[in-house]
Each structure stands twice: as structure tokens, then as C-alpha cells.
Image 1 (cartoon, helix red, strand yellow):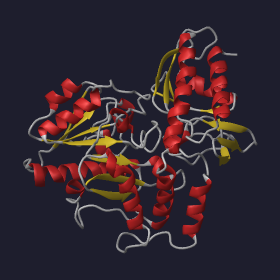
Image 2 (cartoon, rainbow, N blue to C red):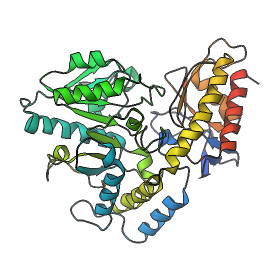
Image 3 (cartoon, rainbow, N blue to C red):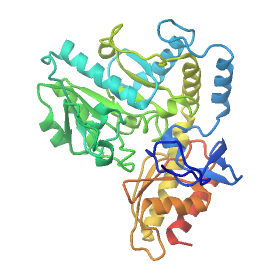
Image 4 (cartoon, rainbow, N blue to C red):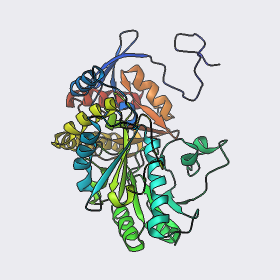
Length: 409
């Protein structure tokens, strides 16, 4: 058994290795631990906290709904379900392929991806005419779409995949960013291409500019669906409502989650072409908590925050500043690599800098000591995802701490 930060034996299964800090309160970009020390949160719960901790509009929406109704199950309707679907379709639908769009609410990101997989397969059988039980979906290496047994079956991360077989068939993996390899993988059994426009868990890997447009053309030419997993990249993180907008690409289906719940409750959804999602008829798919009144209340407030576009523009502006400062650190030899899009960055530690960190974990521990929270991934990489609402001065304070941590000062 493991031990807690306080030294007691933990009753938790050891499937996480958190940094040694126990948080108690949060507001905006700041959190406070149980000892009263404050930190700037540059992880934002993997983009679930795009609007910061306890955003007043989101907390107010949750409080109001808690006094009214929290759950009906989908056996009954409630007064916020259709308004939520209409609002989300109005926000995202114009960014998608097709003329009419539907929303299928779920709870977690992995559930949204599973829903998109099921819808794509059923559409493939009923509309595309793929022989029964032969549908395939093309995915990219380095992907992270969740941790269910189906999803880890097409993961290329050995830590996520190893030990959980037998694996679910029906997926073909190709190199990310290689449109020619993807074209070779599509055949008469293919029903969809499932991609992250930006691979977040892999370290904010941004594809070549011609990649996603080429994928869209290929899907159009072959008649298969383009499914964009925007659970981390969507809802403002990349400086636009969807990351796909940055390449003027319109997917057929998009999976949303994390920020859709505003850091208050788990909320996810698949939004996409009506002719695809309408294959999921009564009894073929569902969720007891999906689209519950509390989730819809918070989700509606999230859509309200994003509708004016000011947060997306802010993410672009602050993201340019973030990119400039990180590029300067790379020019100084303190980082081996930097990738940014919107207010999102992946940093590769430059091993061998005198006094500098040698792993992403060590860099995060140094940042923790300087009052900044971040998280490593894949050994020598650290992701930064500040709340879209962070003050520019606070962002600079965090980046000053990063520079000091890299120098060992």
C-alpha cells in the first residue's frame, strides 16, 4: 500500500502518482493547499478547468439547479435537456460538416469517444453498407482517447495498454501526421478516421498544416467519417471553439468533454451530423446520468461563456505571449523542444543543462517548490494549460518560475 502526503497509509488504489501537494481551495488560476500555501495552476485539470476554479457563472448555475432538480435519468425529460442540446448545437454545429446536427450527451470523455465509435460503426453498417462485424476505424499512433478496454486496445502507449488484453479488434493504426499512410489504410471496411487535431497527452503535438485538410479530403473522397476528438483541444483551449478551426477543417462528428463541465461536474457530448447520430435509436445506446439537469445547467453556462468568442480570442493573444517566452527559453538552450497552439504548450526538457532538471517530473517538482502546478508526460515532457481566464501578470509570474526552475536557480 502507498502512503499519503501526511504519512498515513492510503486506502486508494495506486493508479496515480501525484505531486506531493494536497489542495484545499481554488479560485480562478490560484489554488491553496492544506498548509495555506498558494499556487498558480498551469494544468487546469487537463483543460477541464479552462474557465478557472469556481468560475462565478458556473458556480451560480450549479447552485441554482441544486435547489431544483439534479437527476431524472433519460427515462423522463427535464426542462434543460433540449435547451442544452440546442445551445451546444448552435455553438458547434456551424463548425461541422453537414447541414443539420444532433447532440448526444454523456458524462466522461471516454464515454463520448465510445459513443462516437458505436455511432460510426452502426452508420457504417446501415448506411455505408459494410458487411456485419467487419467495420474498421483508422486511428493515429500516440493517441490518447481514454482508458476503457476498447480505447486502450488501439493505444500505442505500453503503460496504458499492457496487461489489459484481450484487445478489441476493428482498429487500424497509422503514424500521426502522415496523410499518405492514412490513405493507404482506408479500404472498403473503413467507417471512420478518429483523430485528435492536437495530441495533448502525447505532449501537445501539433500536426503539419497540410495534414488535417488532407485527411478531410480523403474522407470526402472515400465516403468515410472524420471524427475529431476535441475533449482536450476544444472549447477555447487552442484559441478557437474547436481546434479544427485553426486549419479550416469541419469534422463529421466531434467529441467534447472536460471543459464542457466547467470543472464543476463531468459533462461530455458527441455533436455531429444528424444523419449519423440518428442511427442510435431508443435502446441502442444510453446513459443514466448523461444529460442530467445539473450537467445541463452547467453546460449551458459554459456555452454562454464561449458564445461571444472573447475567451477564444484571449487564449490566442495570451498564447502568442506564452509561445514567445517559451521560444526565448529554447533559444537560451534551456528547453530541447517547444510546441504551442493557443494557450497550450508542450515542453521537452533539455537534458544536460548544468543545474537543470533531467526529467519532466523533476521540472514539475521544481515548479511546485516555486508555487506553480504543472504535469509531466512521457518522461521528459511537461504540458502547460493555464486557465483561459488567467491574468497576464500571473502568467508571466509562472513563466518566471519556469525559467528559474530550468536554470536551477
